[in-house]
Length: 263
Image (cartoon, rainbow, N blue to C red; front, side, top):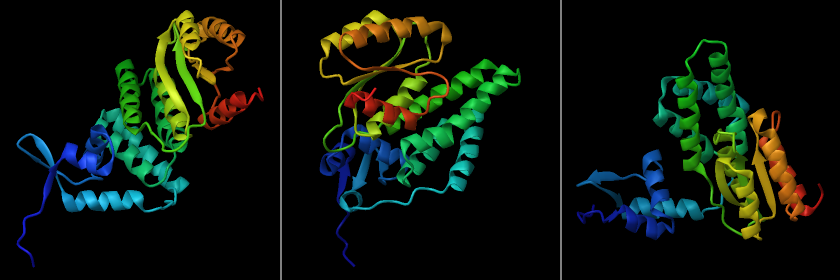
């Protein structure tokens, strides 16, 4: 057995060796994908572990997606974690499922959305205070932000995603952005409460945009959303306006059809 000490790399050097951004390597450390030790305020990673993670990334594999029963169990765990405000647990559940092969669309629709609907209904019925519902949404949005994919290869096109003034819910725009990026679209994510005129101006200044997606969760903002959509369409960019009953899977199909000129 060799007594040669293990070569240790600072996290930035490990990220460079793996060809990823520092924040990506940091997320891998937090999730346990990249083992590291905190020494003197810096994360250190063994060269052996860096090589192993690198080899795993290069190795072609198609993981079997978790079964519906497993997704249901994880959704129940995530529900409790959201009620408890346990952000670390929510992040771990989401990251583990994605690493196991769960798509962002399935993660949102089968694991995340049911607890959010249940919590929202409990608040509406007077069984939970509003801060529980707001905290749950904020935790999910941050967790999804950590999972925003940056797929390799040629993009299918460019999409702008936003919600208009009066629609203050940014989580649906984050969900749409994550799903579209996973489907290999480049996305300009402008978030919520954007004046319609600003959306029109943004599109005028970015002629590479193929499709615009306007999220709509507040019926009182419907008129503003429709007005902005009409102006953007008149300038030549296909525009989709979301609403109740829309699914992320359907959104992906609708965006592709709009880009192809089928809608």
